[in-house]
Image (cartoon, rainbow, N blue to C red; front, side, top):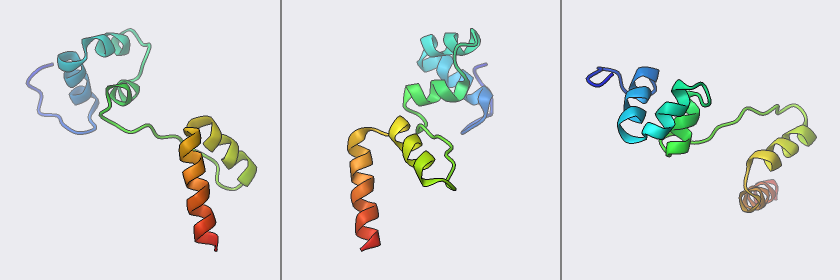
Length: 85
């Protein structure tokens, strides 16, 4: 795949970059163990993102606790409390 004109978010670009820089992650994508996006997250090229329902505060808080480090949850709580004051 080397020599493609793809860049950014295109899967062929990610696969080429994984092949060159992280062959172990490339192999896991080819084997179907990971998506190209998940491999890019593991490689540190993309941030981890999640989708959350925002119409139910309890479910939103549960999702945040599941996906966010405790210290970041605490910081978020401080920010929200300051914004509400």
